[in-house]
Length: 327
Image: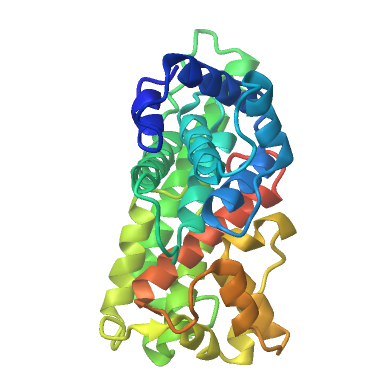
């Protein structure tokens, strides 16, 4: 049993018996055994969207472990169990793909959330820490291969792979710094200072995402993103409504940003959903508010939009590729 499980569960059921705690933990262990990226998205969608019903397979696991567990009025308990599954999945060693997907899903899905449960924030903070630690670890964990004398063919291959990895890391860092220095959008082929604020928010995210060679991003990526944003005239003072960030994009910007995200992730990615809707030229605000449960007149800063779009891009990439780590 996780050392904090009792504390987490007692938030919604302070009088839970030891037997109940043990049965719920057994259910979590069963879920973790078969947890994959698709199930992570299902759990996170259920956790974040109040109108979403819990996956049947998820409910069944806990019912099998506790036959007297109620079947009605337990949505908050199931949502808490879902976020605990995601939290534990983030801590699993040896599976960066699962850990990073769980962390990104939780952070991305929580954007704009209304009436956030009091127990959710701790898990979001942990997701942010996991991405930072993992982003650094995948770039620094490789030790220089040891070679004998005479050197063997497999040792030559190890050295070549190590050097290639180091070169890629240095290239990524240099690309980041040059981008931050020039403040030029490769995606939109113009200086950020010449773009309207909505295009700056999206363009900076897309540009630094395209310069990154691995997911999760390097820890400095978001810091540099914010630096470029705040150095762009007019950005700091420009809090806009959600709908104005999207309506402020012209057709060329929308087409550049448009991507084919997996259907199962769209209810976690409000910006991807909105861009797709705008590209189709349809009325979208009422449907958006029903789906994402916050109003399109809600104001956000360019930094909030840019960071969210960057994280959505990373999540879509994780769910679109087969091998999980890197590209």
